[in-house]
Image 1 (cartoon, helix red, strand yellow):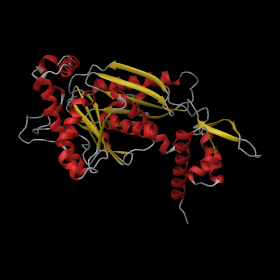
Image 2 (tube, helix red, strand yellow; image 1 turned 135 degrees about the vertical axis):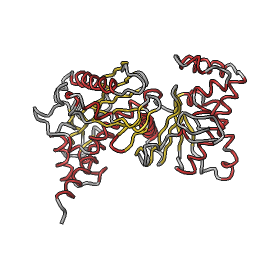
Image 3 (cartoon, helix red, strand yellow; image 1 turned 45 degrees about the vertical axis):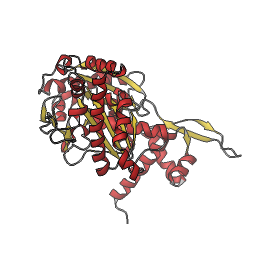
Length: 417
């Protein structure tokens, strides 16, 4: 005999199954849901009634059944019921957005956080204000009974168990409980918060974008992104971001490609970032990285200009970086065996120089085992990937457990900011 816990788990999974199908394929009829999910019609009737009662789906009209029977009532996601809020923490700014469950953007914001290197407290205070501003904006336009799915804080650095930021070289943080700091603000104490690695969210977004575009996705997917601060990345397996035992899975920038190579800020030598990071590429091309510390974008633009002009030193810098990247990808392929590798940031911008050289270095192995090497492509979302991934991650909490959304009553609203 099934226990109440077993029954509740089955119901939760079935609600998730139905809601996900409506989200992906709506408007759709109950008969379509039964066919797609394999659930009997009586179960579909009960499950959709519950999803309507908590405001996640609604009926939007009728469609002909194609026979002499009654028209079918169509269901789709109900707008304005659920909101997810994402905040990306960078060295100097907070980049934020809020979306509905169907990914409709309700609000965007970018502001300086004013924190000194190594001090997370101003960041936490500013996050609390951003959340209040975002919810106030999202609640407008008839969304007074909105349910907050989750606030997702995406930070540069390893995030370990209990969502502690173990280490962030970019921010100068070590073992920071950002969630506790944010919740020290009484107005933010009730918000559901998740702290995640920002590159993992970008990887998740790119993986989902690839799946949305092609209708399929690789079982194992790797994402590498070059930015002004280094090289980040993420690993996705069977649709789930892999964080590893210490929050370091997917840190491709710190794969050593030469133990005799340049010293890295992480304490090791010869990491991929010491060859393919923006500063390393500038130096290898004969430019002074220190001259662009205040404006890395200017250094990136200058290197781009030289590359496209055929400057020999700039081209050699990318060739050296490509060799390091090929070495790193060989290691990743032998351990994680990704079917696809996506390059982002300046790795995507300069893929015309990087990818042919990477493939040249991998040619010997490809000749022997051509099906073992990953497909290499460039990103679809660009700089927006982290925020979009964090928003989708927040929405997943509702798609995974629709029963967590309260019934649609006057009290079922987000706490006032």
